[in-house]
Image 1 (cartoon, rainbow, N blue to C red):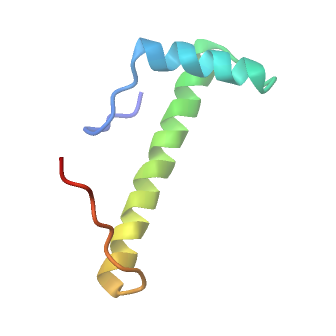
Image 2 (image 1 turned 180 degrees about the vertical axis):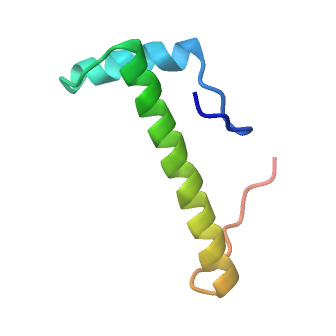
Length: 68
C-alpha cells in the first residue's frame, strides 16, 4: 500500500470499492480494490499540486475554503 499522510485506505473503503468494481464489470478482488484506491489517491494528489501551481502562477484565482 502506498503511504500517504493524508489518506489511509480502510477496510470499509476496500469493501465499497469491491462493490463498485463489480458494478463496472471490472476485476474485483481485494488487491484490485486497493490498486484502484491507490491510483485514485495518486490522481487526487497530482491534481492538488497542479491547482497550487496554477494558483501561484496566476493562471487561476486562489480557491477560498469555507470556514466553519
